[in-house]
Structures are given as C-alpha cells and as structure tokens.
Length: 486
Image 1: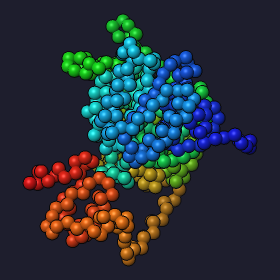
Image 2 (image 1 turned 180 degrees about the vertical axis):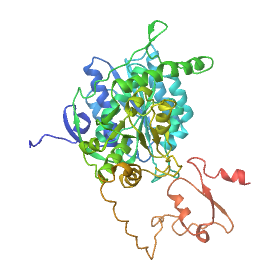
Image 3 (image 1 turned 45 degrees about the vertical axis):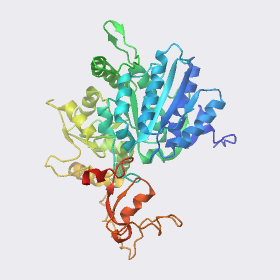
C-alpha cells in the first residue's frame, strides 16, 4: 500500500481528489467550501454564507465550519460564517442570502446559504423558515438546512424527530447514513435547491455527525442531473422573491405543489438518491430504510445470518435504500414493491416513510402487505420511541422472516445477562466552587423552576435540598409556567 506522506489536516477541507479522514460534522463543514470550488471550476462567481445555532448532534459544527471558512478565505473564496444569536434570526439571514441576487448591487451570481440547528431549534425557527421557504432560492445559490435530530434525548429535554415538521415546511429531506454520504448527498442538496427553488433539509443524527471515516473525493464524484419543467410555455427557473404576503403567497403555494416539489421528486429519481440496493430473481419480501437506519438494518440482517448480497438474493430479500425519502416518486415505490408479498419499513419515531409507501401502493390489486410500526394483527413491531440499532432491529426482522427463512437464519442468541444493580448510584452534581453546590438555599416553601443549562441538575436532587421543582421549560421560557400557576 502506498504511503501518503504529504497529507495535512487541512486537506479534509481543501482536498478535491483522493482520500481524506474526517467526521460527519467536518464533512458538512467542508460542504460550502467544496461547492465554491466546484462553482469556480464551472466559471461561476459565487459566495457562501453559514449561520445558525449549535446543539448536539451539531454541537461542534460551528467550530468545524469556522475552520473551513478560515481556509476558504485564505484561498481567495468568499465564505462567511456568522454564528446566529438564535435560530430564527439565522433562518431569516439565510433567506436574505437568496434574496441578495434580486438586487442590482449584488456582487455574486449566487450565494450558498446554510442554516444549522438541532430539532428544537427547527421547532423554534419554523415560522422564520416557512417564510424563507416561500421566498425561495436562487438558481446559482441554494439554501440548505442542517437539522440535528436527537431521538434518544442525550442532550435535550425531549426526544426529537424532525421529519414531520420538515414535510409541513415543504422541505425535501436528505438523510445521509455515514460520512461519505454526508459529502455526496450534501452536494446533491445544494444542487436540488438550485434546480427546484426549494430549501433542502439534511437530517443529521449523532452517529453521522460524530462518526468518522475515510472518504473518497473527486471533482466529478457528484455530477447532478437537473430536471426541467415548462410552465405556461416557458422554461421554469427559480426566482426568489421577498413578496411573502397574500395573494402572492397563495400562488407560491400552488407553485410548490405543481412545480417545485414535483421537480424535487424528479431530481431524486434522476440522480438515483433512492435505489434498490439488492434485488434477486425470487424476491418475496422487501425492506425499506433511510440514512443511518439503513446501515443499521443491513447490520441487523448480518446478525441474522444474511451476511452478503448473495445471501439476501438467495433468501429472496430485496433492499430499498433511501437517501432522499421526501418527496418520493410513487412510481419508484411501485417498481421496488413489484412482485413482492410483503414490504417491511424500518424507521425510527413516526412512520413517515411507511405512510408514503402505503400511499403509493394503496388500491393496487398487486400491492404487497406493508408493515412497519405494527403487524397486521396490530401487534407492535418497530417502536416509535428512542432510536433503532441493529440489536433492536434484528429481533423484529426475525419475527417477519422466520416463517419462510427459518432454515437460513442464524440461531436466536441467548437472552442477555441481567445486570447486577449498583448498591450506590451517583446523580449528576454541580462543580466544586459553583454557588449551587452548597451555598444556594431557597426559602422554605419556595417553588423552583429549572432552566436549560447545568442548573437543570436540580431535577435530580432531593426536594428538601432544592425546594419544590415546578418543571423544566423550553429554552427561553424559564419561569413562565408560574404565570399560569398563579
């Protein structure tokens, strides 16, 4: 194996040909810089503007994108990173990056705008984002929303899933499953936004943001195929507009469903963002999954003894890998499901993909049975809580496959060993020297409202030490519950 002795850490952002090692967060940080280089090779004079508000799993994105922007400026590119005061202001700022091209004074042919935030930030900024989505994007700029999902609430008050909100905001959803896909699908997200006049959302889970790996890089690795549509006899071209007021917005709503989202669906089909990854001559069951969940599903099948593509074909198992689950062409779903007796949809949280698959197949005489969250007898299959990993996916798949594949599946593993309970448990506690560690004492009978931050640890402490806790609110609303209680 050849030894690379000239590799530098900055190559994770600067390199366009070869291999680089980076995290998912760093892959998304290099996205605007990589797009600017691609634009320059294509003869376009563009800039990039990135703003948002951090939070796990995008907690380090601001640090990573600041490093990438510093390199980009040193290399003569116009890439501006401006941390947002909050998610709403950041969303409206990115809206402005698209509207800039409507001014005669604009110095660029287009501006790549990127907003970032975790799922609660998406909730908080939904009104600002809805306005930005309606305002649209420029055909040489594009706007992308990086949305960090925290399904297990590892660093959030509540478990989160952004899919349903993004659908309601009319944002196509791109869902990378690893670091390589974060780079490749990220480029597609920008190209889709430019071609279709829509904001494209990239769903980022912890395993992708914090995961690391070596990726393949090449200037021609992503060569978007752009769909076109004629409206009233003319080629339709995205034109951002700040006229987000009735009756103009009613016409924009029609345009979303008749033009923009149809083009987005065509973009996904033309660029093979959703593919039948494994197909055989005697398939009877199909399994559909998106992003990181797809990779976990493949690992779950390996645990069941179906280790290779040949094993899956021999067993009659067809796999549907989705990188852009929304919007999804119904014809592609029907082509995947053709000839199958059953389709199993594997997805965490709400059954968005399951609904899409069922809608595409509903009423067709040759439609297979579709299961996901529940079996036909209403027994539970994949949970709507927490996250899905190979160890939790495998037993559910075994239940659906065993009737026909019992002789091919690996023996069921023994029950996990019971954990010995600890005799002493240690709750999180305030740092030594913090006023809340010992000296803070609320008056007897006082009500205490915890807030977002380290002081939320009072929720773990005894009432006699910290007083009566009246709940933890969303960020910025600390204490407002007292108004209603009063």
